[in-house]
Image (cartoon, rainbow, N blue to C red; front, side, top):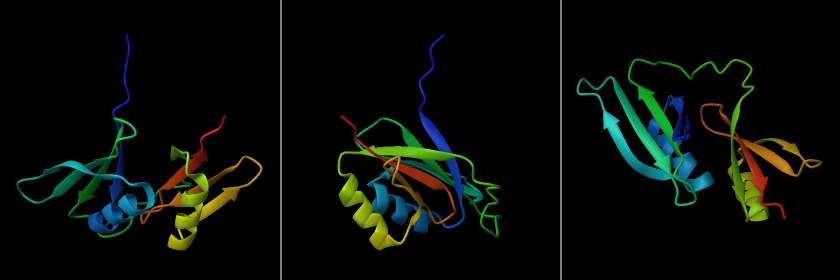
Length: 123
């Protein structure tokens, strides 16, 4: 059997804040959404043209606080050929939460506390 990864879900507290963050920080834009008829949830899939992988952002009407991510020992990684430009943008945004210069990587944190690894293209 073969399996293709298609998306990962992050539950978010403020959907518009998250959509704005992902578009500015990583160029991810909405590709489709699903809304519950009773308004109890909204699911938005975001992606870019670099991959067919999507990030699913789920907003739940009844959630009244940020999600508890525990020790946050997980992350989603993004590779870019414009590493220095990305680092400059993320520094300006104030979203860099951890850097490892020895490995040549850094992490940014989204509005809900999810960590996203930024990796340069390596030759």
